[in-house]
Length: 215
Image (cartoon, rainbow, N blue to C red):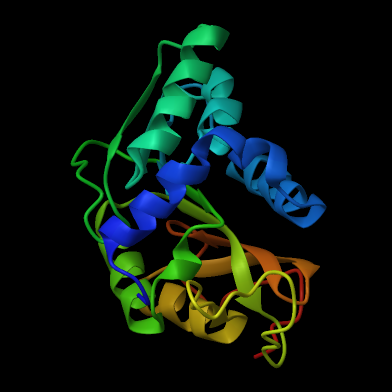
């Protein structure tokens, strides 16, 4: 991680009020794919890591039994709580937590995250995926900045000062090492994509994907 948790939290606290209005078309496409692939059942518990202003958590709330959002920015979560109250959701909660320390020990069926894990180093991403695997979800849907080819710091989704994206291959290896099978790869942009990793019956063989993994 190129900055401390407090530095990242402060940065997002400062932009929380405008965050939803400043997102790119690629970010929104990625979020929509995460929501589509998460597809919780009515009795599922969803853990949304790096929940931010709650875009994923609140979109999944109508279809899930419960959604637990975790983030390091109180400013972002305040925005999420306000939206949840305005929309009348009573099955959503937001509190502080990180990828490697989610501060949640209840049941989890589906884990989601969008545009957050790229702040971790590759080794920290591996540690986070191991921690998440220990919660025993059947599915982890990750939307993020990731490299499908050679990284280009001039591209709009990669800021070397604060971001540390991984290649798709590195993420795929981290998932399979943690006991997941990669069942879908969605390429939104050369540096933006969605990975779907699953565990359980029928997913303990070779990973199946719907796109070629480069990098």
